[in-house]
Length: 275
Image 1 (tube, rainbow, N blue to C red):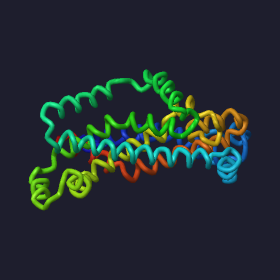
Image 2: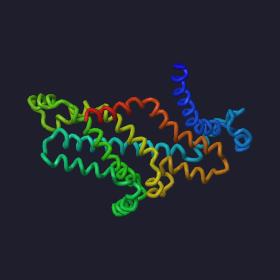
Image 3: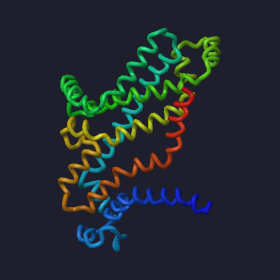
Image 4: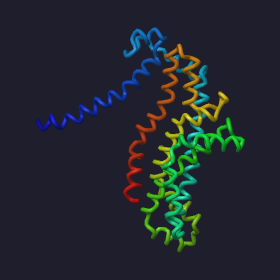
């Protein structure tokens, strides 16, 4: 009876895992089937004949490669800049003494997390159009950085508060100023939280659709989520190639989560508890 009670949660979790993985397995099997007829005749089965050329056709002819690298560099650049700015702000409000202003600045950041992103679509559009960067990658990079700053600052600030002040006191005795303490001491010690924030911000930028869809009209500038919609419209009769494009868009996210999921949980938990 005790063994049965222990196995029930495992059976439940395994069933849940199968339900979650089923759509992805369906897309993978469809991506290597020869044509629409093969998908229609055996939609949920393993293909009898593997057509890996669907991935080549999707990558080259449907410009999935262009969309992929656009998303990659935009996501990485925006994540790195948001971490750099967020780390400097977090250092200023946690390790430098500004009296009551520290709490005021930090509260302002918290307010930024309460504003829904969709409600800012029109103001952001007007701003990027006035700056003259509409239909450029800057129209995405700048909003991505601004959107990621509140979360970045909160996590990094919580982690920085846990650092002992004796380290900074010793650095001051050695002649380091605030810039040196930040770059040579605090920033290296905050690497676990930085890794967590980078992963979360990268995945958010990688999957973002609304801004990329409305702010970019040039086809060669589009990101992968938007490119997949165009791919569907252009190749709506070729579900095999469309499935191959979906795999391209999902695989990087799955790889990052599967390899670095422990770092994500560790960083967020450490920042929350120590803060």
